[in-house]
Image 1: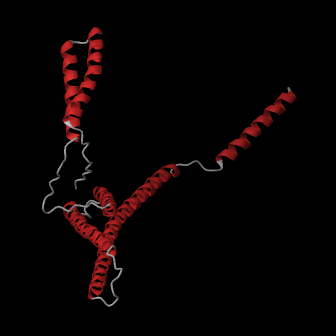
Image 2 (image 1 turned 180 degrees about the vertical axis):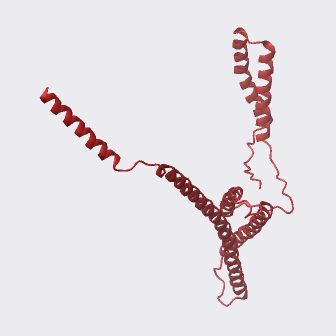
Image 3 (image 1 turned 30 degrees about the vertical axis):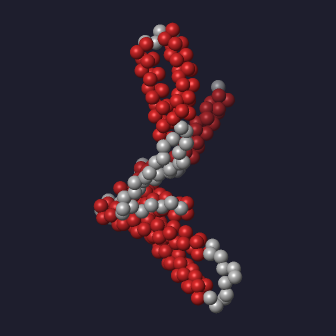
Length: 245
C-alpha cells in the first residue's frame, strides 16, 4: 500500500528562485566568515555552504514543477476521504490481527492466514473503488436539473431508473464492504481474546505455585499465643522473686 499526498506546484518562476537563492547566499556567507574567524576549517565551511545552497535550490525547483503520478494498471486508487478512511481503518485492524499470530503457534499458519488477509484487503479496496465511483455518479445524477420537464417525459423516467440502479449498487457495495470489515474485526477480536485468556491462565498458575510455596511448612497458628503465655508466666515468676528478695 502506497499513500501519496500531491500538492499544487508553487508556481515560482526561475527568476524568483534565483532571487531567493541570492538572498539566502548573503547570510550564509556571513555565517561562513564568522565560523572561519572562529577557527573552523575553510574546506568544511565551503562544503557545508555549497550543500546548503544546493539543497535549497533543488527543493525550490522541485516544488515549482508539476508532477504526474504513474499508476499501475492493476492498482486500486482511493481518492475520496470516506473510502480512504474506511481502508485505513481496515489496515489498522489487519495489523492487530497479524500481531496475534506469534502467540498462536500451531493454531494459525501465518502464510495461509496472511494470504487470506491480503485477499480480503484487496477485495475491500476493489469495493471501495467502486463506491467512490458510485459516489460521484450519484452526485451527478442528483444534480441534474429537472425544471420545465413534464412528469411523463421518457427522459425523466430513464433518469429515475438510473438513480434507482445507482442507489441499489450503492447499498450492495456498502453491505459487502461492511461484511469484510466485520470479518477482519472478528478475527482481531478472537485472537486478542484468546491471548488475553492465556495471560489470565498464566497469572492464575503463577499465583497457585506461589501460594503452594507459602502454604508448605507454615507454623501452626497456636505458636504465637503459646509464646505470649510463656512469656507472661516467666515475667510473673520474676516479679515474685523480686518481691521475696
